[in-house]
Amino acid sequence: METNANPAGESLEIQDLVKQIAKERIAPHAPDRDISGEFPWECIRTLAEAGLMGAIIYQAQRKTLTLHFKTSELLRQDIAKAALGL
Image (cartoon, rainbow, N blue to C red; front, side, top):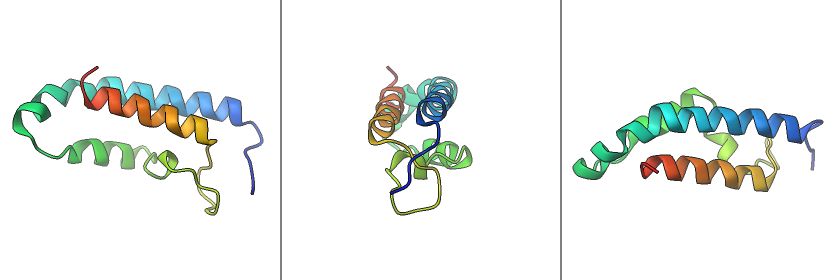
């Protein structure tokens, strides 16, 4: 299993990106999604456009972005909080 050369630095950059996207693009629409009950497709598109959809899953067998499991969990938490408007 291959690991990142500098997992701490890369993880921090990705966490900052996720927090920014969550704050600016996901959280502001949370109340509207709660009222409408619609699936948050715009969140999925936003994360995909940023190249983060594969980053959320620990990618041990792929040659794409590989994150440590703990970092991956922190990203999911940030996105989940934003999706709830927290």
